[in-house]
Length: 493
Figure 1 (cartoon, one colour):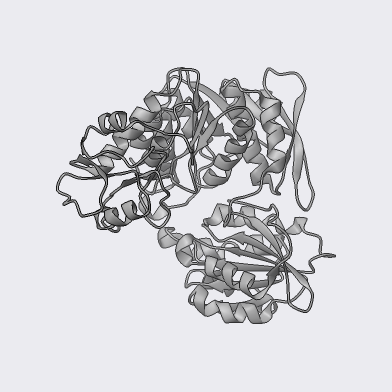
Figure 2 (cartoon, rainbow, N blue to C red):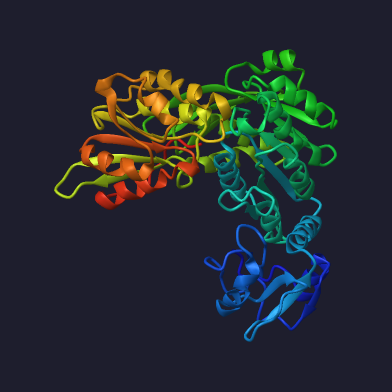
């Protein structure tokens, strides 16, 4: 969060289309919708979501809020400070977000990221790469929904040179208004898979919903599309209706072949790749460029390499210094819950490696995370343990999609499977009895069985949809074992 004022009080009131009473207690240096994390100088926005933010306005001022955006009907309480009144606080936040986007310099560049898998990780890689080149602003955590996107815009300093936004969806029509606020110069779709399939008739519907991100592209903008995805042609057709530049991303094809097959404008492709236990290294080749660009990522997995190709294409599309941006990826480590690695020591000796993939899951990201296990040498970690929770929002095909992960379990040499949830039971019952650790109806019920069976030399990967609450198992393991080193890199969603 910036320590410099983001807005003057008068300009903020005007941006919100609101009226005001009182004066802010000090400079307005941020925005918050949650009093649990509010900081002095924040403007508190009383949204009506799962709870009514108006119940916490006084608490926000008690914690140092500079001002609060509230409904016209809010009754001020003793101790309240400057109030910005509006008919609808979410609409006011959206208006502020649009005003923040409009005040960027004409040479600033904005990038928007969506996709079924890898949004947050790609966004974080983009943040790291562009930070090496100039003032960069990016979404915090997974702030990618109807309030997260305008909140990220509102927090954006006017001096931002590069802005990176994550945009998500659960239903058709959700991305269009968000990309309209962001107005990106570069829009990318990491991939299209059957995440949230219960809300769509088929995967083609998911592809069309993801392609909404192109509707907000600025004139002469660039669409980045994964040519290795089975829906690539559909996404390209959607981007063509916007009359924008289209760059294809591929790890499996040569640039000339991909351009001929898909009739895209440019291609960024993987020329070479090798992996160690802790890093992915390789070279990128680009259509129309001589030679290759080297890269090194401080994490492992072909899905992570694909993200690096997207970063390369985004750097190129914005006219940034591509080699310098790519060089910054050597310091990349995945966000918590998306593949962060921690070495843990049991009291009395003996080490395990914990891979935290607990934030979210769908079939594609499950396979990607499991695919990294063979890169870990059995000399250091003799046992590979997968702790998997239910993948949610998969509709009537959910049992089959869970059971279908058996080939990934077999291919990656998982020695023991622990499973939580009724859907993951279908996978658990597929594996041979000798490779079954335990199954339980919930992560809480699975916890004692898992903790009792862990031993030195284990590599333990924990993954599941956020609603499966697999994070509690990560916390339980960390509570039993002692962290010996800072978090290492690893596979991420």
